[in-house]
Amino acid sequence: MDKLLTPTLNKSISIVLFILYSAMNLSFLVKYGIRQSIIPIYLLIAVFILVHFLIFKYSHQIFLKFRERPFILKAFIVSVALAYIGLSHVFTDPYKLNIDRWQTIEYSLRYWLHGKYIYDTENFVGNYPSYLPGQLLVAVIFFFIGNVGYLQVAAFLLFCYAIIKEFKNREVKWTGIFLLAISLSYIYEVVCKSDLISSFIIVSAFILYWHRKFEKDYFKNPFLLGLLLGFICLTRSVVIIPLILFFMKPFLATQIANKVKVGVGFVITFSLLLATVLLPAKDFDYILKYNPLQLQGQANKYVTLFFLAVTIILSFYVNRVEQVFYLSSVIIFAMMASYVFETIMLGWTFDYMNVSYLAIALPFCIIGFCYTKQKNIEFENIQ
Image (cartoon, rainbow, N blue to C red; front, side, top):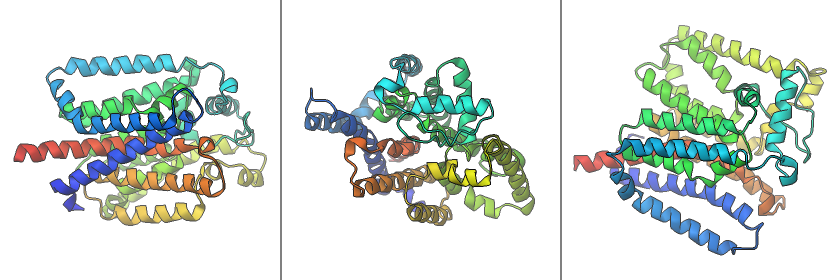
């Protein structure tokens, strides 16, 4: 893993991550591009590839000019946030657009707040909700504000803050923030008032913060860490992949007292939050039939176990925080791609596939790309 410091491998990782980033967004373009007949889909794909090639090749020269003008970056962040707020108000009727996500999150939150079981109610397209209580806890803030779409606006601002705090070079800051701002998959999340990517922005920001705060000892405050992990693990089940990569090796190395404190804190938060969604169920058999973990599982369980085993094995080779983001990007994207491939095998056409799951790797992919860009700048300065 230490060989990742070499310029050649760093460049290769940079290319792979940008290809993954482009693939996530291209999937959205293709899925929704084939539903219209105004512009040929092949032309849209050609323009998309050209634009992203130019971004990869020449964005360095543009962002370099902004390096001495930090106010431009601040203005860009504010402008994007305001644009996102506007986009979250564009569509007000999920039924006309056949978008089930924000209808599902809204009635799930109402059920949750009124002590009803949320996992046994179909939405208007026949799907069941799979929200874990950690994600409900995050989304309820914006439910009370009056628009669950603001969650993605807040997630964007959190991502910007994490990028600004982690990377000192302004060119790198521009890169990370710009790539999320123009991402078709993220813009789709904002317009559809979805909450999917926000969970992974939260865990990405948490990893960056915890590494920066406790770089020499991740278990300096073990009980608090356990409480936070109990909450984060109940946002989306897939977040355990980057958490395993980040914490597995140091957790095994820390003293037993720290392990116990982390475990106690985790059990407290995890149990309390899980109780809020499971206690309203009729009985245990009902929970087995309608439960969030079963509903959140997109891929075949054997495929999921395979990627989980790969994650655990690779966690022992992680030596630096950037490797967490490199590996998380590839593992999560590959696992979600296997789900898409499985739907192809079942005979689904592309316009009905839920390619949005590919985009959950987006925050890790962008942050990992920023690390490679930072390394490239360091190599150039050494030379």
